[in-house]
Amino acid sequence: MSLRLEGTHSKTGKYRRSTAYDISFPTMPSFTKKPNEASLIQKCGNHDVLVLTYSTTSELWFENIPTGLPVRFTWTQNGISKNWYGYVSSISKVVASREEKTMELHCIGSSFPLKERANRVFTDKSIPEVVERLAMENGMSFVGDSHERRFPQLTIAGHSYWEWIQEQAHRIGYVAYVDSSTIYFRKLERVIQHRSTSVPILSMQEMGGTYGTGLLSRTLEYFKVMKGDYIEDGSSLRTQKLVAGINPITAEVHSASGSPQNANTRLRDSRVRPLFSEYRSDQVITNDKDGKAAAELLSFASAYNIPAKVRGQGDPRLHPYFPVIIQGTGKQTDGYWLVREITHTFQKQGTYTVDMVIVTDGVGPSENTFLRESDWDKVNRVNISEMLSQSSISSTTPDNSEPQIRKVTPTILPSQEGFAGSPALWTRTAFRSV
Image (cartoon, rainbow, N blue to C red; front, side, top):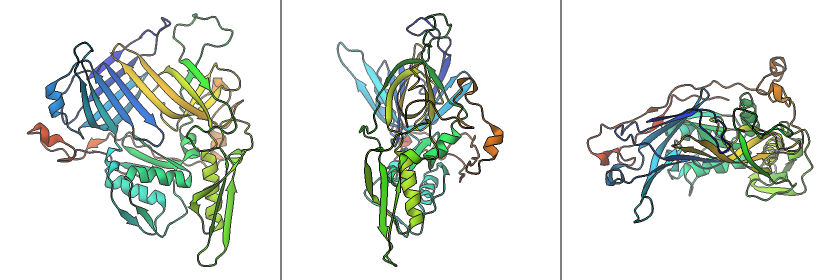
């Protein structure tokens, strides 16, 4: 099911970049109806949600499309392709006398199997090691950063696997997300580093330029920013992080602190000192080394506390935790930002737009590094000689393998395709990067 969108017009009469998208159901290939609209909703810490809206209803679909049906959504723009894998979660329909009859398919990303709730106990493991094991058990690849602290016991109780993974990531200052069918459990600074060589640019028309003189429409349509030193918007508070604990053997008291102002990796040149301190009761340390590492990671994750709402041209490279460049909004706000949540919207008539919440760690000029040039003429270029001199930069082995269905029962009856009865799971050859 492929839809090619070439040279579509924006509201200003300008041309947009061409986009093509394709939707397929590997275990139900006869379902080829094109949706009028597709919306992919991605938020930090949440499962991805794909909503497919159809302009007609069908009793056959409503009866036979089961929960757990594998779905693949692919979109391509300017030679850049992105694959999204997931499972049908639910189907809904609207039947009314005057309103248009519609049907929606709600799909959850490849993290869907991690909704499993079970009581588990792991002994003498680090948190990334447990996350890796959960990923492997559910047919997913794993990319993670090692963590020196090992726990005598880690318990999963009263949580789904996904909820536990997110809770533990927040606990040690990591981020956890799924891309394709791979789960990433990493330090935020590593994610920024490895995504800084191909950063999408959303730009308003330049100040002072003649409006309407370009062929292509501007890629940034709306930008609303909130500036403050202590913004409470549901994200991690920008505070000095304090952790403490007592060694149960020696009875020694250990404590450590970390400030987002002192993070090694930053997007902006300048940061202000945090106004408040925060004791993290979820962190109990037994030595100074663990305390220092925990405080630094927690403070770094809380540095990105200046939010903005954005609407613009879609780009397959936009994803939660990934960097994006904003231009044409002023000297204080132009530069590098991180995506916190995003909704990709594809219309049948040809438009591809994104609505996002993005965050950054300060205002003013962006910091110039070998991975992120503040000179916009050199964006997405890498200073190789400086990079090789940085011992802290790690490399990852890209996994370009195509996810495959791990188990498929030959379809005899539609009811046999359900996830509970005979699960068909997306899976990839497992690998690990540290």
